[in-house]
Length: 94
Image (cartoon, rainbow, N blue to C red):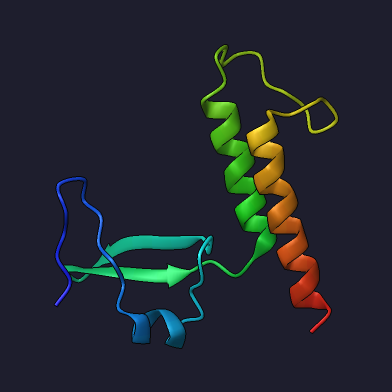
């Protein structure tokens, strides 16, 4: 049985991760449904990118000053964006 640590983290059992194709870096949606926690892997790269862009905008030091996609993004955000796009391209080529 999995345990919740002091930071609210749990480790999904290997069998569950394999069954749901959850690998390191997989984005997941976690929500409550009928009193249970539900974990679903996010498989739509466009939704992941939209969510990342919303997070970047919301956490910008000056919230009223948003960055367009043509401007130079934060290097960490760009690294994540590139990784998601590579994953999407790999999925489309399979």
